[in-house]
Every structure is written in structure tokens, then in C-alpha cells.
Amino acid sequence: MDFSPGESPTQQIQQGKLPPLPHLWAGYLLGFATVVAELIDPSLHSPNIATTEIPIPNLYLFLLMFVGGVYWLVCVYRYHVVMRHVPGWKHPISPARAVGFHFIPIYNLYWVFKWPQEIARFVNWRFGQPVMKPQMVGLTVFAAFVMRFLFDPGLGLILLFLAGSYVSGCLRRALALPPMPTVSSPPAIE
Image 1 (cartoon, rainbow, N blue to C red):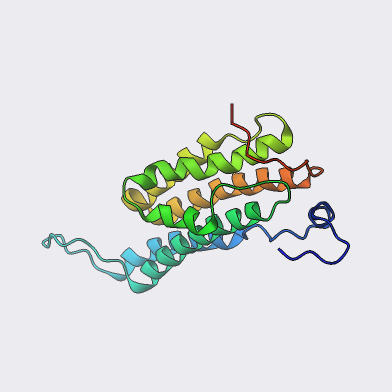
Image 2: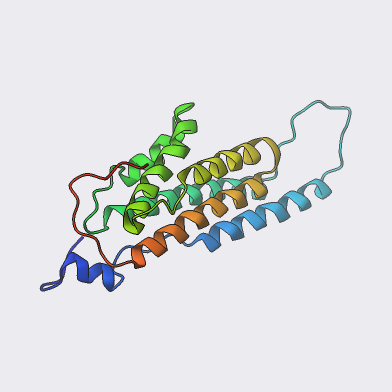
């Protein structure tokens, strides 16, 4: 992050010069579009009960599901970019690592609980009390993945961005507080 001459990190955070948080409205829009596409998709095909083939979604439905999942990962990346630029805080997770660990089978079940915990550590440090509950984010993201892959991709996508709204809200309130002094290592979550 480049500082203008004569500007300290404290002045930059007060002026709102951190990278912006992700725009979650786009994720909700993709989720609602996926739900609408799911409702339209069966009406375009006559059901063939005689075949045992697994139904393949139409291209537009697949694209909406794919773009929605990619946009979720973009949002996770942007949360960690913001955390990397907070003056006085050393965030232990790089943005690339935050996204990349979502692709490791089995480990990703742990990871959806780990990265929100690190963001919650920052939020709770800024407030001086446990305000953000990382378990809620992890459970919501895990439930969204189950919903997305087993039941309804559109509702699962909306649930993902609901978890993102909670993270964004907590981060936004924590970043609005006056800057804290620099710490050498993050404090432990209680």
C-alpha cells in the first residue's frame, strides 16, 4: 500500500483508503437469478421417467451456478485483501491462500471455519470483546455448500452471501472504530 507524503496509516484508515469490501448485492443477484433459472429449466424439458440418466442442467443454469461460485471466491479474496491492508494488524492468511484452500478436498471442510475465525480475531480485537462469532459463519458456509450441491444451488448461493453479509457487517463496524496501536502478533481468541 502506498502512502502519500505526510500521510500516516492512521490517517489513511480514517479517510477510508482501505480497499473496498466486496459488493455482495451481485452475489445475491446471481443467487436469485439461479433460483429463477431453476424454476424455468424443468418447464423447458418434458420429463422422461423411463430413462435413469442424471439430468444435466442447461448451459445458462450451469453458467449462473459457476459464476456464483467464482464470485463467492472473489469475495473471500477481497476480505483478505482488506485485512492485509489494515494498519496495525498482521493478518496471518494471504488472499491467495484463503481462496486456494477451498479447493483441497476434506481440508476445505475445516477451512470454511478457519478463515472466518481469523477475521473474527481482528474484529473482536478492535471491539475489545467477542462481537463476531466465527462459528456462525463457518456453519452457514458449510450449510450453504451442502444446500448448493445436494438440494438447491440457488438457495445455497444465497445462503453463502448471507454469511458474507455477516462478515462484511462485522468488518465494516470494526474498521469504523478508531485505529488501534500496532501489534506484533494477533491475540488469541477466547
